[in-house]
Length: 357
Image (cartoon, rainbow, N blue to C red):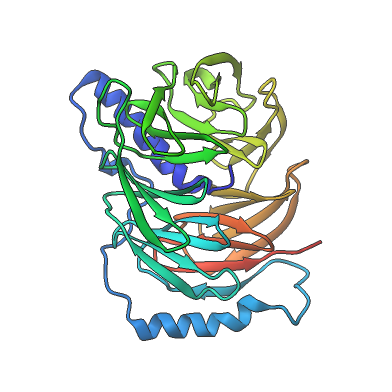
C-alpha cells in the first residue's frame, strides 16, 4: 500500500488494545493509547493561509531550475490546524483534519487548497481512495462517507455492519484493487467496493495485534512474531510464517515490499518466508515510513537533535540521504513523484523535494 505508515501505527495499536479489552470487559474507548493527540481546533485566518500558499508556490513549482543534488525542504504550508493523514489520489494531495471534521484537497504543484470538504468526524479521521471515490471513515462511527473527486462532495453515507448485523466502527480503512478492508476492535471486515457494505469478517486468530493489506495478501501480525496470511478476497487463512525481525511491533506493505518495525529498527521481509532481506537501525525513534518507486523514506526523532527525514535504497536498506527538519513530530507521511509530504502536530505541512538520481 502507498498510504502512510505513521497513522496506521497509532490506530492499529489502538484497535488491538480495544480487542483485548472487549474480550475481558465491556468495550470502552482507549483514547489515552493514541500515538498522536492533535491540538484543539482553532480557526486558521484566511489571510495567513493565502500568504503561506503564495509564498510556497515559487518553491513548489521548481520547473525552471534543476533539482537539488540532495533532498531539501522547499515549502512549509499551514493549510489547517490539525493535519493528520496524507493521501495522494486523483491527481491531488488530500489531507484529513479530524478535529475540524474536514478534508482538504491540494494542488500538488503549488500547495494551493483546491477544495475543502466537510465530513462527520470523531477522535480520528481516515481517508483512502477506492475505485473512483475517496472514502472517509471515523473511528467512533460505523459509517463510510464516500466522496466524489469530480464534485468534491460527499455523495453517500453508508452504515457499516458485519454480516450478522453488528455495527462495525471503522478504524483503519484501505484498498488494493477491488479488495477493501476495514479494521476495528471486531477484527477485519471486507467491504463491497461498489457499495461500502460489509461482506465477510476475516478468519484471523484472536491474538492479532496488527492488520495490513498487500497487493495479494491480507497480513495479520499475531503474538510471537507470527505473520498470518489471509486471502484478500475471502479472509480465509492461507498459513503462517515467522517474522525475521524478533520483537516485531508493526508491519507495512508498501508498493510490493513488506516491512517490519521495532523501535528504531526496520527490516524488509521476504513475503514468502518471512526472512529478513536486510535489517538496519536508524539513529533515532522511527515515526513513519513511506516509499516512492525504489526509494524508501522514514521520519525519525533523535533525542536532543530533532527530527530527520532519511531516504534509503529499498533493495539494500542503504542510506541515500538525510534531511534535517525544523518541525517536531509527525502525524502523516506520503511520497508523490519527486516530493515527500509530511504533517506535524503543530499544524505544518512540510514538502521535501527529492534527489532524482
